[in-house]
Amino acid sequence: MRNPSTRTLEGPRRVSRGARRIAIVVLIAVAEAGLASAQTIERITREIIKVQEAFFEHGVSQLKPLTMTQIADAVGVHETTVSRAIANKFIKTPHGVFAMKFFFTPGYQADSGASVSNKSVKEMINDLVAGEDSAKPFSDQEIVAKLQEKGINIARRTVAKYREELGLLPSNLRRDYK
Image 1 (cartoon, rainbow, N blue to C red):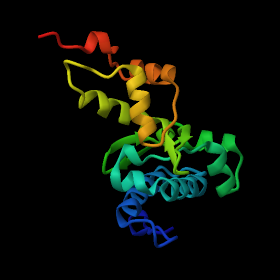
Image 2: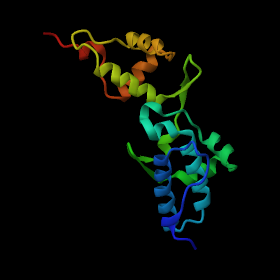
Image 3: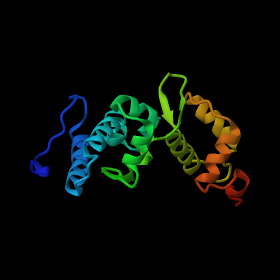
Image 4: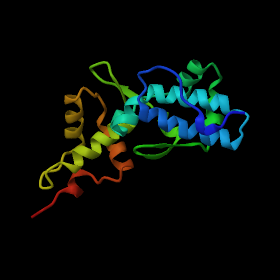
């Protein structure tokens, strides 16, 4: 048996060295655990890194929508196999430690044709609220308009839902009366 510390990640050259190092950490942990499904986890991890490469280099704002079905099809296993394989598994990234399930997220199609994950949209909403004038905070409808300027078409009630999930108050309660 090979020494897990000498394992390398082969594959497309377009995957950054940082992403490869992250994958190697996960793969070493899997190999050390002696899991029978190590090859499956390895293939799933490689595919996640390939799809989410921009996240590994730039952070949550670059997370792409991804489903377990997409990974299952790419790896050649059933969707439930992917689900079981990633259960209770974590990956160390330059942006922190994340459960592997974190990388599976629904998303939206931007006007430019690019896919944007709902986590990226939540981050955009959080950034808009953080940068707003406290004397005149953005209403949910104004946030919708700002997102539409970026090519993301989203309903006002979805903005309200995401705002609540982020723990952000409605505009009338964020207003600073001085």
